[in-house]
Amino acid sequence: MTHDTKTKIVSVERFVPAAPGLIFELLADPRQHSKIDGSGSVKAAKVSAPPRLSLGAKFTMDMKIGVSYKMTNTVVEFEENRRIAWQHFGGHIWRYILEPVDGGTNVVEQFDYNGSKSILILKLRGSMQSNEKAMAQTLVNIEKHFSAQQ
Image (cartoon, rainbow, N blue to C red; front, side, top):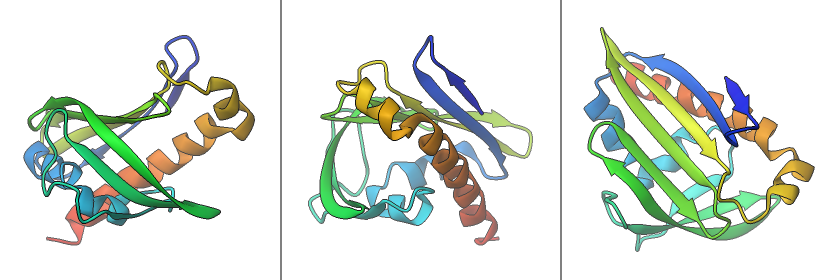
């Protein structure tokens, strides 16, 4: 786990014993996000969400941190089986980078707050540290998702 304040990216990584394509399909389906979310805040994709994300796709998630709310995201990075990232109105980006390795995939999740419109609020809320912890749990959940299928 790394938190680089110079690059404004919080990054976690984990080996997952599944092919990059399988992991990418999970990440590219917003209906699956609540199953792997390590924060507990992602509840469900709105029915209007596309069944599979693509570059420029918009999708809205039902969220809850104390109170329920909705968050619309736009896919801003998309490289089939390698990288997917989305951004919402706050400006920060959630990114997954998949690197094939023997026996599976090295999965990197990043919270990139370079473009954030509310860095002070993020810092006051301790978002970098709580996101790092939640992202580590997300990667555990992704690994469990694939180990449960075997």
